[in-house]
Amino acid sequence: MSSELRWTVLVVVLTVAGVVALWPRPDAYPDTSADPRPVTAERVAERHDDAALGPARAAAALPPCPDPSGVSVPPGALADVVVPCLGEIGAVPLGAVLAGRPVLLNLWASWCVPCREEIPVLDAYAAQPDAIDVLGVVVRDRPADALAMADELDPGYPSVLDPDNAVQAALGTPPVLPTNWVVRPDGSAVRVTDPLVFRDPDQVAAAVEAALAGP
Image (cartoon, rainbow, N blue to C red):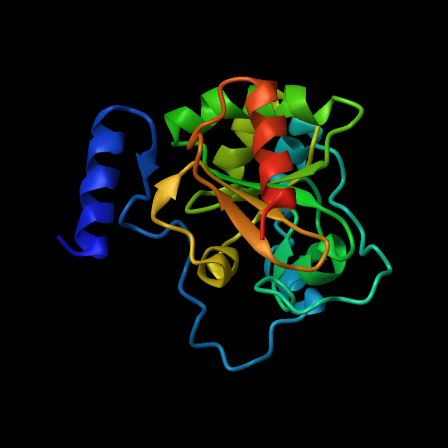
């Protein structure tokens, strides 16, 4: 059995078991991949200045998205990725924001049931004094729906949107949610596969420690 076929079988089994959720086939965003203009922070912010989201953003009251760290951007999959912030108007240059520090990226969506169960666990982990920063990445979802779920769950960490699938493509993320990545200070990223869904903060801490200590 090929590795691709084994992965497909595993995804189907886990999805049926309710462990992970498959991405939906229809895209929640228009396809902008053919736009020849370079992706810049200004262009991303301009495309996603949706004033109608103001009340939803106010209700969700998410923490502001992080600013660039001021450290030189190391080479890495996310070095040139720019995405819009979920909780406020503005663009987030991930390479500059993540540079020089470890960050746990959690890919999630409002339609993903395991994501709904995992976010409170990540929130509890993020509140620990020795936790690394957590940054949510909303994929295959509408901003209004993601904000409604954030309002309900009230996570204490920010999230960004991935409307052009730039984060997913850069990391080579499989088509399942939730998916967690630990981004190291040198820009390299390690996908968390054990467990696929965090059930308690200790699991998060152990996975982060293993990812940072690994090759």
